[in-house]
Structure formats: structure tokens, C-alpha cells
Image (cartoon, rainbow, N blue to C red):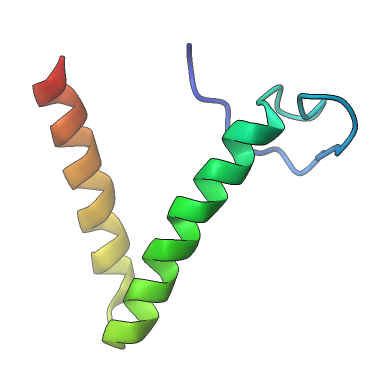
Length: 68
């Protein structure tokens, strides 16, 4: 399955968003993870949040590559 990013045409009806095609369950779980990362960055009071975001993205990418 390929990830499809939000395109801003979100819908709440049914089991899947008609805008991106992702399940509402997937969207909710991702929001939880992102919310946790945002809360952590705010707690740490990072002044360079762009570096934090890039680091997290790169770490996820490398861990996924290592897992495959």
C-alpha cells in the first residue's frame, strides 16, 4: 500500500476519506503520533523545529529501510 498525503478535501462520511482515500482509522492514528511529536518538541522548546522534523523524518526513513 502506498501512503497518500492529505489533499485538503477531507470527508468524515463512511469508512474512508473521499479526498485522500485513507481510512478514518489510519488518519486518526497518524494524528495521534504527529500530535505526540509536536507535544514533545514543544516540551523541549526546540528553537530549530525544522531540524527536529528533518531528523525524525530521516530516522523513520532509515529504520524502514533497515527493516526491509
